Length: 337
Image 1 (cartoon, helix red, strand yellow):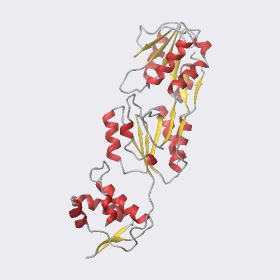
Image 2 (cartoon, helix red, strand yellow):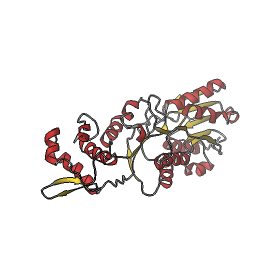
Image 3 (cartoon, helix red, strand yellow):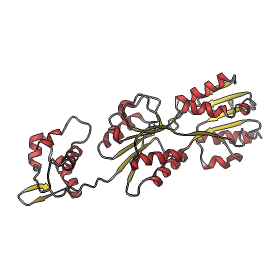
Image 4 (cartoon, helix red, strand yellow):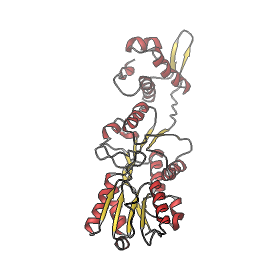
């Protein structure tokens, strides 16, 4: 029973899950042989001070996997050493929207067909983010995490074993280890994208950045840094606002927006004034979607390649070596500027 001494009741991994993993690892490492007895439920409960339900759950899941069985009056024994671990993926998004659908579809279409994915949402709630991770530790083969917070969440994410961790879309600077990651370089992506359209942007009197302050919209701090650096270095008059209002909307201004709701409101207001995007005002948005290709004749966007991001995430899950990679970004020029 030496192998069961690895049990740690102080761990954040549920005890039943620990028992299950300890038995599976012992079988894989041939510490326990096929046909060999394992401790009874009562003995494990007595020796480790556990509730019977905890041990019963672990043994029942092992029985369902075909790893253990029981004989009347003789207790439990190892039935098979043929362990087929089903690959299950914990996918934690901030919330679902049009570009997340592109990312999700890309992941799912690139995964091997026998892999299961369960999707969760944290909705920019840090306590919910931490709770979802804590409650699901030890239950999945991989954890794909979208850490859309401007706070440091490295201590929360560090609870996930690095060999199971994949970070998507936003880098976590304080996180150490050899985990997988595919993320945007927000500051440089904004700066370099705007640089490709510098002359068009300079046709306007001022450049307005709306941070779209809202519990339903995440704007990384690095995006504003990239915007301000571009404007300062190229002597462009600029303004940063938390949200657009009628007083903010002025002729011969160009706007960088993150919120789709704010984009629609701006288009309605400009239409009511008889203005056209690309003539009286300019509009640039973040994250491309099919809608933006046709809306108002085409909305210019700064965007990362979410389809590519999804294929990289899937490749890590499918067995490719983990690495940290910056996702490609581009400026798509349309009629709105």
